[in-house]
Length: 110
Image 1 (cartoon, rainbow, N blue to C red):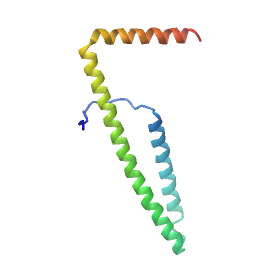
Image 2 (image 1 turned 90 degrees about the horizontal axis):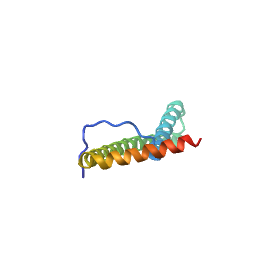
Image 3 (image 1 turned 180 degrees about the horizontal axis):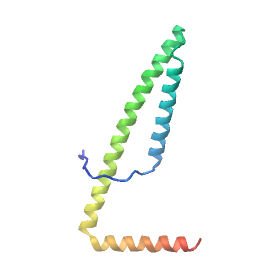
């Protein structure tokens, strides 16, 4: 397994990031619901609320793990890209120029 480096990267808005954001929002709303219903005294409701509290806690832990794994993957990809650019600088400049031309062409068509 690769060890993460200390380089920082900009946040990426990938589908996984959006899912993580939605799950975070869901856990926040579930915690708010748990706090709002804390005064209810029904035993079945208390048991259900406790199971929900445990699930929210577990989900938060999994989200933290997912974020750590995603950050390590991004750092690893950035490190490999940096190594490739340093190993083949002229090829990297050619790819960057081609990408710039393509983007310029596509933007000019609008």
